[in-house]
Image (cartoon, rainbow over all chains, first blue to last red):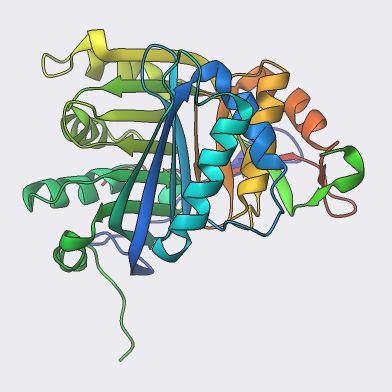
Length: 184
Length: 167
């Protein structure tokens, strides 16, 4: 562990810590979710954003949002939300796409909703500063032949979105892979 | 949304300088194993799959880039499906309050100012956006016309760093 020293240079502290299995604070499973994938031209993101920004600040709560380019300047925005919210959220997204003109452009904007899906959420000590954590989770699920539909790791959080049918198998696998402290 | 309707947030954080890598195809699990074996930390990872349409965006620290490049030369990695962007930084805004309107505001402001979004992800309470490192201050200044920080708070850079030395 190191940090800036007000007097200049760096102060450094080394702590030795061993763990046989990667420790997590807990693994949470949420089922009954929907995953919307919005595929649009990169230049349409601003207009999409403008329309979304006009929504009431407290409507359409999401569980997870990710975005990345998918090639040919296509941007893929993925939203995970409660299945109960699906009709209204999808309706809002379609309305936003239509009113902004994004839906009818030559860029063939696509909205795909996959449901039901589940998410496994885990977080652990200093996950943002340690290597190999994602590998442990991805490898375990790959060996268990459980496909990951979406994953996001930022800060100390790790999200793994799976098909709802494989949710129980997925959490059992991760419970065997990671160490979850229990009260004695 | 005009500046009279500012959204209250808790803070804005900047990362150190990073390198952003985007890979498509089905090599993600192999690449993550190689990165772990090389003891490289990933401050950011976003994966969408599965199958040949896999897309992975990840970041490493600038000083880890040389080691990452060695891994990318491995035969198992298809270099034609790689896109590497240097000079990347993450701006983290918290909390997001699970608000789609906030996501929209951010997408819109980045587009209006032609600031790139290489990738983004929410975590339990924050949203992290990977953009150009040298623009972080400018972006935060623009966003503060629409986002209200608590009194006496300013965007900050983390000065304390935790580094895992070995497995």
